[in-house]
Image (cartoon, rainbow, N blue to C red; front, side, top):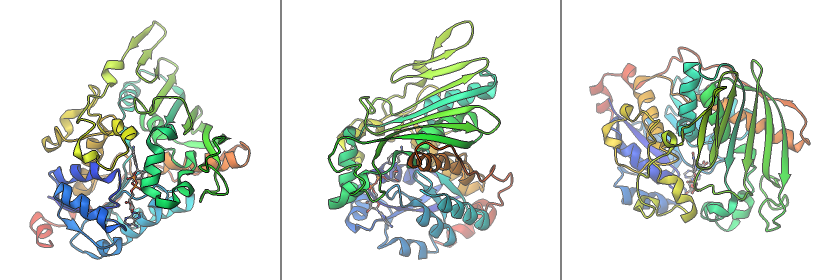
Length: 419
Ligand SMILES: NC(=O)c1ccc[n+]([C@@H]2O[C@H](COP(=O)([O-])OP(=O)(O)OC[C@H]3O[C@@H](n4cnc5c(N)ncnc54)[C@H](O)[C@@H]3O)[C@@H](O)[C@H]2O)c1
């Protein structure tokens, strides 16, 4: 059983994934569209994709296309995802899920009503530290986890100026001020992706920027935002707390490691820094850094990185770490570019498996909401001077989502006939 996929947005990130989607044995053809058609043409040409569409609408109108993967700018995902689900397409979305509670609610409603697959491509779910902590948590080694920390530490000077210029054109400063807490999934996702649960309330402090270069200037920002760093403390359901840092002005080598995690339990704890990680209990500690170190998958000058700012490339070349379960991945992905500490291959495989089998992916709509909503509330709290406010929650994913997996929908021959 195979399906066809359309990539929406042929910018800096999409190329990495287009190549993997095209190589996946359950995806028969990959198409692409971009509001800048030359970008779609260039990507299709470079990777030998099946073709391009003149617009997102034209892509949705094609009954022969089963799924879309959205790689547009970070504040645009919500409405595009809903439109695609309403048009009957399974949806993979780059992070974040959305930028308002209303948009998240609409996606969940559309997933529930359509029975289609929605998955958010949260790279930190397969971050080696998250994978390690998830395993230790399932073993019970932490005891009760009562406190955890997630940091997404990415300095603007390390590639983000170039990335926003590529992305936003002449108007790039309006968008480069994107509020840090509206991009919370690489920190929250690595905490909740390991320990489960959800946030119930938050108090957040935003740090107004002082660079004075027009980025993070409220008068210029389309988000009216001047925070470049923010720190939030969350209360978790069932007790316990989670501290999240989203930093964009910070003296730190984000190209070496941009997401970092710490988890504290009554029986054991785990702490990670830029190049080291330790497991600790009452008796002592074990250096687990080597288990978490991702090998390099391709060189920094790999052609697939042509559109990626040089300072961002390091994140796109990291392959699997020893802690990863490489055996569950299809052989066709082996040796291909990976990225974000080995997570890309798992995300592509999770989506393909969910679409074909009609199973819930790990980062389904309900889980994605739990990685996204805390940041939306945190930003609101920061705007209100750190006032403690509730975090919305849409509950656990339904045990039987009633998903319309392709395998359940039609026999193989019938699906192929439609193309
Ligand atoms: N670790 C990660 O998970 C990670 C890393 C990098 C980027 N991302 C996410 O990937 C997404 C893409 O990032 P990027 O750096 O490639 O952005 P980008 O700005 O380089 O590319 C976005 C592309 O989408 C196109 N586009 C916008 N609206 C469109 C529409 N309606 N129809 C068709 N095309 C449209 C733009 O023209 C542009 O070419 C972002 O949401 C970002 O948050 C995630």
